[in-house]
Amino acid sequence: AQKVTQAQTEISVVEKEDVTLDCVYETRDTTYYLFWYKQPPSGELVFLIRRNSFDEQNEISGRYSWNFQKSTSSFNFTITASQVVDSAVYFCALSEANTDKLIFGTGTRLQVFP
Amino acid sequence: AAGVIQSPRHLIKEKRETATLKCYPIPRHDTVYWYQQGPGQDPQFLISFYEKMQSDKGSIPDRFSAQQFSDYHSELNMSSLELGDSALYFCASSLGPGTSNNEQFFGPGTRLTVL
Image 1: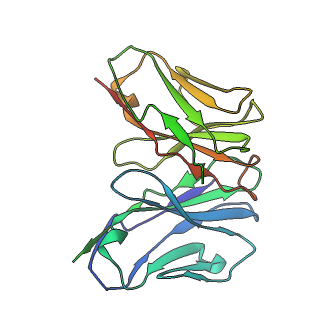
Image 2 (image 1 turned 45 degrees about the horizontal axis):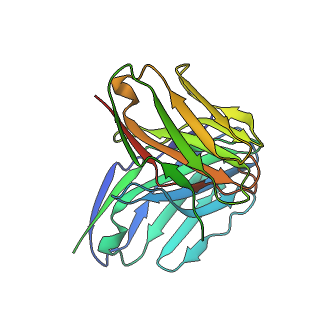
C-alpha cells in the first residue's frame, strides 16, 4: 500500500537557520514519483519538485535542496538560511506509475521567526 | 502564464443543499483532477478525468459526481451537503493522465463552508 509519513508536525526556527523536513514513503512499486508542495497561509498548493524512483541524484535549487535515498525510503527537504517567507505547510507526496492520484503526507508546518 | 481557474473561490451553503464547483484547466491540458482538503488535513484525491472520461477514482462520496466537458473544463457536483463537506477543494490539470511524465498544476482552490 502507498503511504507517506511526515513525522514532524510543526517546526519553528529563527531566520537564517537551516531546517530539514523529513519524508518517508512506502510503496510496492518499483516505478514511482515523489513530490514536495508548499502551502502558504493563502492556501494554494505550490509545486516545488518531482523526482522519479530511478533518479537518486540530490537536487539543489537556490536555498532548497532535496535528498532522495531509496535505501531508507526517504525524500528529505532542506531549506538553507530560512526566511520568514518560507513559513508554510509543506507536503510530501507519492504517486505510483500509471495512476492519477497523489498520496500526500500529513504535512509539516514550518514557522520561521524574524 | 495561464493557470488553473476555479470558481467560485468561496462558497457558503446550508446542510442538505447542493453545490457545483467549476474548474478550468490550463489551455491544452486534457486531464483534470479533484482533491478535497479538510481543515488541518492533507489533500485527498477524489476523482480524475482524461479526455472527458473518468480515469481514476479515489474516496469520493456517492453524493458527489463530476464530469469533464468537451472544452475540458470540469464540474464537481455535491448534493445533500453535510457539515463534514466543509473543506478546500482543489482542481489540478495536466497534459495527459497519470503522473509518469505529467506534473499536476493546482488551482487556487474553492473553500466550501457548510452551515
